[in-house]
Length: 347
Ligand SMILES: [Fe+2]
Image (cartoon, rainbow, N blue to C red; front, side):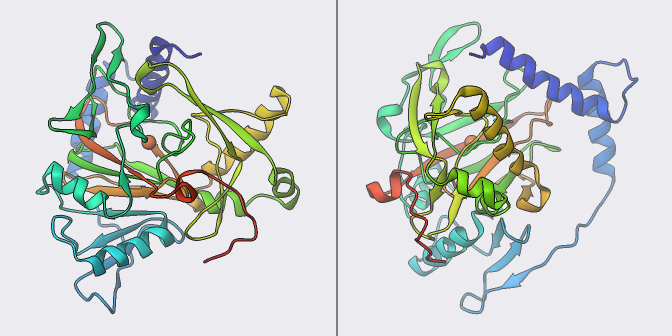
């Protein structure tokens, strides 16, 4: 099992790699190299070309797709004041695009953030189902501290990142797959974004499955995987899920293993299982299946954990940021419990 110390060393290696990639022979402190680079980057004004689509039904809404199969920025929405028709439209885009984004939502209150999320499912605790909730978190030096939640809102978790805690979930995963009933969605608001870096990358889990060769697809049909996690160091919680997951709303098949929480394949020797999992997890590294989101203050991402995986790029230290996350649970067991039914096809 990875210790907190080992984990932090692994994280700091990534930061070091980012800092030194452009200046490999530089002997300055890593933080100085990053700060100098970022100041220079801000001087360059770069406009990226992108496609803007307009909805006929909602002329005030503009869609900005980030990649061909995954990720759309929805412009023209005020999350503090959405109609049911807008919610239905957003949900349809969310299901098709696996992750949607909103800009300029820094004005919403924590209560409004939770109210918006509740339109897409039941509200969960910081780690999904409320019975998973750790009451305290384990920290490296001090022992245990209170959960970093927004005052008065137990389900709204503050995600800090700074020099002390540079972690930015810089590993591929979908959220809380170690739970028997993992969350269907996650909504993340940037109260304070890093000025440079800290993008989140999302990978289309349908494409990860569809891109496999036929032999591998056949091999996966009846396999189940063992997932394990330890929320804030509070004991191990585990679950067994099918390797292939049918999305209950779209009927599409997703690859549902990840290198963060998946530990093995049920009934398979560990060496063979590790090789198979490595082969499957390499799918995440296809840029064609990915979109990448640049955070600004007030930006929001809402992703579908049944249809994509994500990776928070850990390249922004020594800058700080503050994110607030809430979890969306399914409303029925069919929505909550991962299953595989290959004949479903609702798309
Ligand atoms: Fe995550």
